[in-house]
Every structure is written in structure tokens, then in C-alpha cells.
Length: 321
Image (cartoon, rainbow, N blue to C red; front, side, top):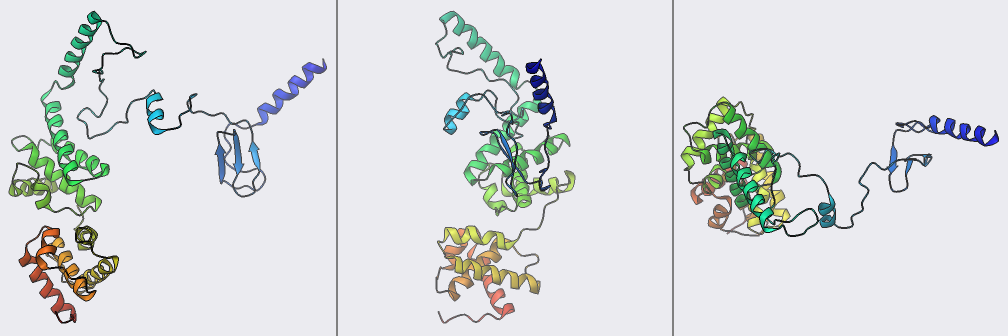
């Protein structure tokens, strides 16, 4: 009877422990630390150990390197819009091995080859899938050549898919529409890339890309902010190996120009290049207009015109050259 009463008492105590704890019973703080290795929930303010019976909901295996973790994982890659089927299709491995890593028998290998062939055929079966597959491979190619981050690729894929839904790609070059989507994504995310830079890596000309970009703005309802010349300064200065002092001075010049309203309607890359040229003269880290124009992907005439305008309007006194 004593044993039974003690068991009942233990059961009552287990029931008293809440399944979800959202605040500390001692100080009322909501800053709780869940330590799955020790199985504890600890208050970050008063240090009270609230419970010692926390269940680890993670995998039962341990991994000590990223490669080992990826190898032991039993799930696939996350859904991504940068793949035409969003990464949801099945992939039959080309190594012809079973679950234990053993080579398949010749008869079984021929059967798996047949599976793989039909799986590849059925993966891209409609005209929409073929269009998206070609567009996403183009997205990968341009992004790798420009060194664009994953967020830009996702944003460009979303814009392109909207254009496909609206029927804007029909009768137009897939490359041009995708290049325009990448340019719009760069503008939205604040990545300094000019239209000329993106058009350079496509077989479609700059005129076609610009036309498709204007079409996206009009039909897809993409809200693109104005390009900020300040965003171009770090990239141009990095290519020219200029110091942070020059970058700060160039940013100050651009802010002064914006305050006076002389940046409206001007090419942001050209303004940034001119500001860097003035700052390099002021900080005695001289670079030629040709070098700066090459780094900014603009012409020397643009740098010269913007430079003269900034010096005149802002009344900047330059050291003797």
C-alpha cells in the first residue's frame, strides 16, 4: 500500500509540470533559456531552474561536422523558387547504389537507368515547365557571373514567375525578361548593379532588357525604389583599393548634393564616381578619371561632367593638381 501511495504521489507531481512554460514562476520574467543537452529550462534573469525534464525533440543521432550532419540528415533541401519545380521533384541518383551503399546488380541497374530516363522526361512535361527551367538556368548563370546573393535570386525568380502568370514572356526573349527581373530585384534589395552590367552577360541587348524592365514596372506592379548613389560608393572604392576615409568623404559629398537637389535625373553610378574622384583628390589618394570610370562602368565624359557640376554647385575647394 505504501509503494502504491508513493507511485500515485509521483504521478501527481508529473502532472503538475506544465507542458509549455512561458514565464518564470519566481520573478515573472519571460526570458527563458531552453538547454536541450541538459534537459533544463532556466530563467535568464534570476537563474532559477524551472524544469529538469525537458524532452529533446531533435534527431537521435549526433554530428560533429557540417558534412556529417548533412550526410545523416533524412530530409531534402528546402523549397526554393529558383528551381522551376520549386525543388519538389524526385531525383534518382546516378551512382547506382542501394540504401546500404552496395553496387546494384546489372539487371537492376538497367531498370534504374530506365526509371531515371522517364523521371527526367516527366519532370519537364509542359511548356510552362520548359520556360521556367530555361529561365532559372539563365538566372543561375547571370547571378554567378555577377556574384549576386541568394536573396536576389529568390526575388528575381518571384518577379519572373509573376511575369509568366501575366503572359508577358510570350513573344519576348526569356533572357531579356529574366535580366530585367534581376535588375529589378537588385534595385529592390539595394544591390548596386547597373543595367549595362546585367545586359553585358546576356545575348539580348541593353535596349531589349530596358524595354522588358519598363514592361515589368507597368504590368507586374513591381515597386522599385530610386537608386541611391551612396550604395555604389563601397563597390567602386573597393575596386580602386581606396581607404575608408575616401569612402566617407565621398558619401558626405553625395549627401550634400542630395540636400541641394542636384542628384535628380542623374545616373547614380556617375554621381558616385564623381564624388569618389573629388574625395580621392581631397584625401590625396589620387586616381585618374579613366580608372574611376572603368570601375564604375560609366564613361569618362560622365565622370568629368558630374565632377565639374559637383565642384561648382557645392563650392568645393580642391588642392592644386
